Length: 177
Image (cartoon, rainbow, N blue to C red; front, top):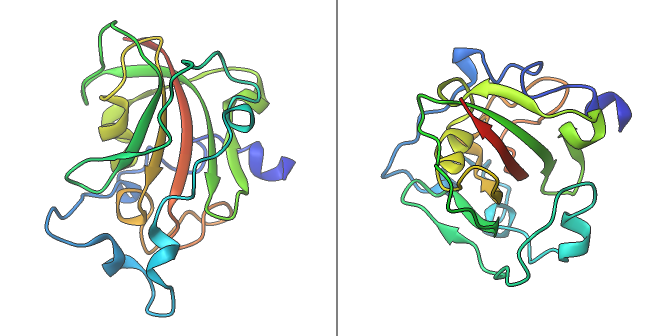
């Protein structure tokens, strides 16, 4: 697992324009899954214990709801730490701490493991991050469930994310530039 953790969001080509997905508003999420996958493969995993989510992160609010909210694009999220501070726009650059994992629980990247936050322009990352980070204020924390079509889609990211993978993230928004 350590070999997977050394790759940052930047290093496995989030900034490459070819990796950014553009959501099709009318396309159902299941349409991107191979025919052999059951619909349960694209539903969010059940509520994960807050203790497990919080390993290495900052504090969470005590009243985190187990339900995810869903945007029109199909992104699912829940705010783990509220913040009344400014929210970023797609044109902003953000500094974040995060952990990303696949449906099977395998962590594919973690700034917590590297011991340092990561900074990047929101316009240059996967569509699920661009949309999701605009839902939380500076200093807040959010959990994102990114369907494949808002992530790396049918191509995946060689060496770290298989094709058609749904992605899960815990993200703390450290600052906005």
